Amino acid sequence: MTPVFNSLLPVFLLIATGYLSRVGGLIEASSWTGIERLTYFVFFPAVIIQTLARADLSSVPLLGVGGALICAILLNSGSLLLTRPLLERGLGVDGPSFTSLFQASTRWNTFVGLAVAGSLFGPRGITLIAVAIAAMVPLLNVLALSVLVRYAGGPTLTIVQMLRTLFVNPFIWSPAIGLALNGAAVELPQAVMSYIDILGRASLAAGLLVVGAALDLRRLAQPRMVHVLSMALKLVALPVTAAMLAHQFGVGVPDLAVTVTAASVPTSSAAYVLAKQMGGNAQLMAELITLQTLAAFLTMPLAIWSVQVL
Image (cartoon, one colour):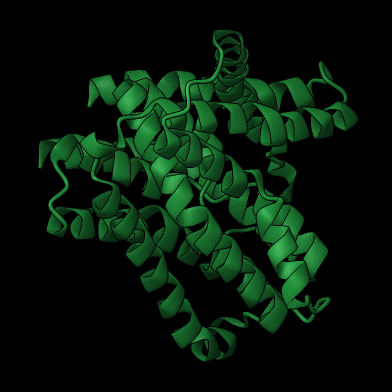
């Protein structure tokens, strides 16, 4: 347990640093938007392209890890959609609130996933997280957009608009570029690879600082059942399901721990932006993001440790 905590502690300290930098006024609130866009569109695509372009994909269980995560997400999504009428009658979860619960229970914070996997498992961990990104991000975006269009009552997207939203997502085009370079065995010039490497090294710290800056503890309401349900589904049910499926798919313990890492991270901070744009309950979304990020300080180490010792 101690090595897991020692590896995760710097990650959460960076998140805390980002939060304190914002609330303390060290960096103006308007500046964080630029840092977030730079991280989202430049730093993280660089590390994903470099990782996948150089990775020996034949040595990692692509189908086992990717398949387990996709199946776990589909199970979480299906259970929510099936119980939506009960959630509305029993907990008063209306359409916009349901979309926020859905996003909180299925989406994942890739910033935290990459940082934790790199800290704990090195280059192989980053490679498997990049595989998870390639497997999960397209599916998660399609699911989130579809649920928001159906239940939020916001603007209706055409097929062309939905496809455009997907393809401009850097977590879709950057894995595609990395996999294409890997498959074609293209060797980029050393100067270009050094440039990408420098950008990639900036990504993990910048991404975690952005996560911390996005936390808004003032938005926390008195925890309600919908808050508890989102944490139970995302931080407990999803990693447990993913671990069981990955084990059934023959994934070994070290790679199983990376699978659980990908499944146990809190929900994506980008879910708030999407909720605001598409008519979801943005305030509830902010509360769920903050609560999950704080709860992950406890649940992530336990989830990763339990896979390694059981």
